[in-house]
Image 1 (tube, rainbow, N blue to C red):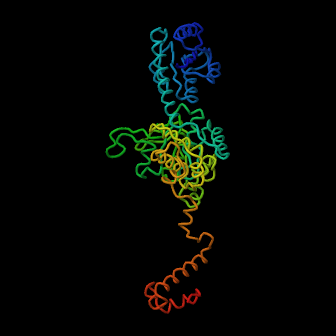
Image 2 (cartoon, helix red, strand yellow):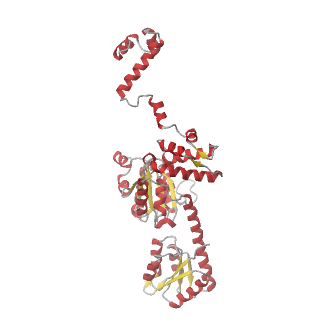
Image 3 (cartoon, rainbow, N blue to C red):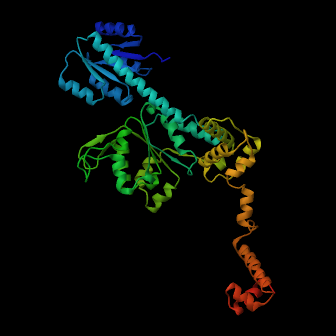
Length: 450
């Protein structure tokens, strides 16, 4: 059952307000009325799905109020009403984002049709938003560090200031970006993701800012870039450290002025976009080295959220693994669970790939395990070796040595084995290891070998 839609009528004529109130309440809408811009501003703080706004509000100007509404809530549909309608007024209203324009005297059929169309667009938009949110459910975390991180993200969610998210690859930086978007006032707007590392330098400007028709060969039409697509919402710029220095300068201007010029264009394009950037690299070091603009860094670093690696938040491994298993089982149509030994095995791994690696291992275990309860053996079959075994294989007993003692130990083992293979014959051993006999004799003496 869909919820009741809330409509705000703003008109200084009481007869118009009462007439619209009666018509819209008969349609089943919850209707609130305001006779001035000041009263409307107060009511806009509540739950409103549609505004019917008169252009003439006594001493107030409806066009100015429309501009305020679109600045505060860009995706709230507004139907303008005028008793002195002109083409110029209608054009100005549509440029500011009005959904429809109705002239007085109002006709019953016209009012119903305009309101239904506007609210249908709201329903469609809400449906899309719900589908988008369902792709990114609430974060799964038990560790104190991650709980604190998401609390900080919620506090920053309603700001327009840019945020930079740091942390190793696969740790969950995009999930934090989603929290910044969906917990704030921009939740109704688009969330556009782009990866700077995947954009060739020659195409990065076009990808972000778009181009005008005729800007270059084969540019047969205008193209809207990611920044315009994100208008009213958020642009998540992943791996910003890989962004070309020239593009960094244009991005800085967007953050500072809210405008840019498309490739091949001359007129500035104004956008209301919040920039959230992410990187696994040390941007401060890159600034010192000159490979990242210092002015962009100082503009971005007002708010920095650092996502810790999975190995530093072991409490999250179990809940995350269970969540990933539930999703995989729903996709492949089975019912499986993780045994205690499997959870212990997962907790013992080093996780260089972080949460992404954990998800892959759990998914593989769910697909390839024939048992309903996944055990440690199933995890070991699809995952990396336990850290103890890996260390034993890779270090071969040298883990407690420094470089000098490890090298000396290796040389002793190496030359002792050569002597044993040659039956103690130094001439044969020197030929086998590719050394002059005199050099090998000196080395054996240094190492105390006979």
